[in-house]
Length: 193
Image (cartoon, rainbow, N blue to C red):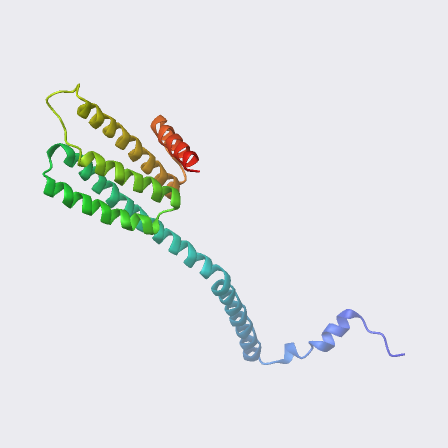
């Protein structure tokens, strides 16, 4: 058998040349090691963290776009609703086309529940905008129908707002009118089946 040496002596034999090496060589090796470590960390970030950040940025951009589209749509609905009292037929048609155009953008970006709520809101708002108001007598059937339409539009507006809030913010407002509209929608689906 061979001669026995201690671990310390073994390390000394293996790395004994280091104290006698040129310091610039050792410094160069340490610099190379640090560069390799830095490159591997950068590669890890590029492969794992960067794609996640890009996906988050993409989602934020889409949500920002949705907020703008929803805002434009709700403004056009508001203008269409208000045209009932003071707008000429030509103005109402112009506002209806603006609302329809804004709805098209909503339908591209929105979740299905939000899209359905916004579509129903546009339909009810159009019905209200083109209803002929009778301002002289509140007891006529036409006046009662107009009041029912206004209430329906208000309820659908709240449903659409809540659908957008739920999609964009994850929360909603608790409103009794929303429950009424959603229940009617559910009953309508049951009757169609």
